[in-house]
Every structure is written in C-alpha cells, then in structure tokens.
Image (tube, rainbow, N blue to C red; front, top):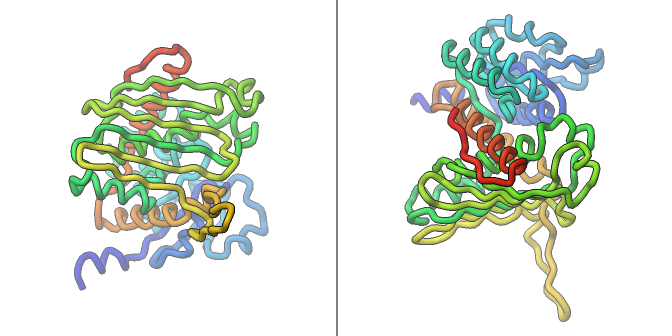
Length: 342
C-alpha cells in the first residue's frame, strides 16, 4: 500500500460547530464522503429531536467545548456567525484540532490577527471555506494559466450576480456586500491569477431595494482592480439577476483567453422557425456549487491526513478581507485605495 492510499483511507473524526444553512450543507456532504466519522454536531438551538434528524452524528451538544475536550476529535468545522469565528478558532487551535472555518475569518482585525497567531503557535492546520476555488470550471482556467496557455496575464473579468437579494435581517448582520458577497470574488481574483491586488477603485449604488440602502449597504457595484504585476481586473456585482445565479470568469492574456460560463439547468436548446431557446442559469448557489462544497471538504480532510497542504490558508482569508476593506473605503471616499498588507 502506497502513502497516497494509506492517507486517503485513514478515518478522520469530525465535529461540526454551527448547524445553520452552511453547517447542514457540510453535514450532508460529509455523509457522502468515505472514512469520516461525524462524532459531534453542535448548536445553541439544538433540540431533543436532533438525534433523529441528524442520524449520522454520534452526539448532539450545545456547548462546543465538549467537542474540543474530546481527544478523539481530529478536526472541527466552524460554521457559526462570522463574529464568533476568531474566538472559536483560538479555542480549537489550543485544543490541538485542525480547523475548517467558513468565510470570512472574522470582522475585527485585532481578533483575526490574534487567532492567526494562535493557529501558528499551535501548529494546527487551518483552511478557509472559499468553495469557489474548487469549482471544476474555474479550475480549468487556472490549469490554462499554469500551462502557459494564457501567456502574460492582462485582464481579469468576474461577473457575480445573485438571483435575489437576501433578507433584510441577513443584510444587517452580513458585514456589507464586500465582506459577504464580493469577498468570494476577491479571493477568486487572487486564485485565478496567482497575483496580488495592489489597488481598488469602486463605484456602487442602491438600484434594487431602497431598504438595503437604509441599512447602510449597496446592492450593485463595479470594482476595478489594479494588480501588482500590472494586469487589470473588473468585478461586477448585483444582488438581483432576474434570470438566475450569474457566475462567469474570464482571464485574458498575451497568448489567449480562458472563459468559464454559467452552469445551466440543462444544456438542451430548442431551435424553431422563430427563435432559439435554452435553459437559464441555475438559480440557487447550493445548486451551482454543490460539487465544489464537497470537493473542498475532501481536500481539507486529505490535508488533515497529511496528504498535502491546505489549499486555502488563513493568510488567503485575511488577504480577501484586506481587499474588501479597501473596497469599502473606496466606496466611501470615491478614491482609489491601496490594499493593506496582513
């Protein structure tokens, strides 16, 4: 048996902290992945019927410290609200657990950097849940870049539009469009190009729902990116694309261009005497990225097994936040803003 087989077959014992929407997504995907034991799920609102609802979990608890105290647990998934991420990260790292943490890694700079320091000191693995890195279509663009097909990178275009706005309750606690929605695109800008963003310039407005404006946010944005290697990029965001979940990326260079288009409900087209028609893009992000969510967990588990390094580091998570912070400052000031270092 070679090391690859040994690592892949090694069972990993997991605890999931936070069983909201994303926690449930990860729970369902872990049930589809071999050689994983879900020993705990944890949520403050866990009820007596959760044992039957989550049959794959051995234990249901309301205090995450119970998970951290169990030496049999090798890794935890942090799926709680963002403001709790740094403290749970610190507690999990001190308990010696490898950590998968949903994006963003936090809101408060001081708390985030403290958590990073503790993770480094404790020597645990830490992966940020930027699932779009694991989308097979976007990875093909990266393949073309690595293979030299693109040549010298010159222009990056990212279109990222939601099919409908989130609830106002969510808007008010999301951290704003740049920290909630565009942060995925900021991470993809770095991942697709393997280049660092030097400066951002943002124009944005409230064009969809005035209530979003009253909450202090915007719903539509154009973000211009200047990279340190000289290339340029643009991200366009909207909280409402009436035709579906619009997710496209293009990387253009001196030798060619790679473009990933939307994933449709089907590839079937009808051609008649008066028109040609086809299906719209998938409507819900869990449809569009269902395989990517599973693939990112498999990658994390293989990292826990020692098969490779984590593919999206704590530093990657902070760099995306730094771009988001610069974007917010640019929107507020109307000026280009340099992206700060970690």
